[in-house]
Image 1 (cartoon, one colour):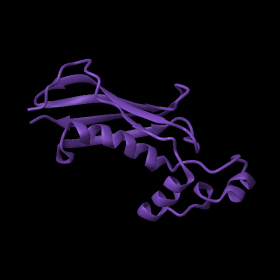
Image 2: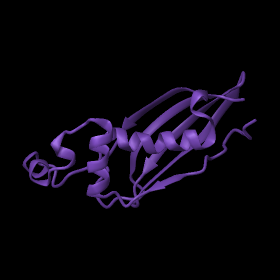
Image 3: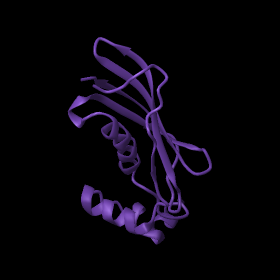
Length: 130
C-alpha cells in the first residue's frame, strides 16, 4: 500500500540540463520530427531564438513523478497545461502534491519548473491506491 497523506509532496524528478542530443533522441523515440525542436536555423526563422523541448517531453517528466510513486496501471487521469517553453540548458524539476484522498483514490496537483523557478507545465492526476 502506498503511504499517503493530504499535502504530501511526491519525490521530485530532476532532469537536465536539457541538451540538443536529448531533443534529437526524443524526436526519434516519439516520431515528432518537427524541425523547430532540432534545427536551430528553422527555430530562429520562426522567431524562437533557438530550438526548445517538445511539450510531451516535459509532460513525460511529470509522468515519471507519478510512475515513481504508483504503478502505471494505477493512473486513471493525467492532464497538463503548458505554461512556458523548456529551452536547451534548462534543468527541469517536476513534482506533485496530494490534494485529496477518497474512496481508494487520490487527486494530485502537479507542476514542473526550470532552474529559475518559472513554472513550465501545470497538471493534475488521479490515481487509484492499492
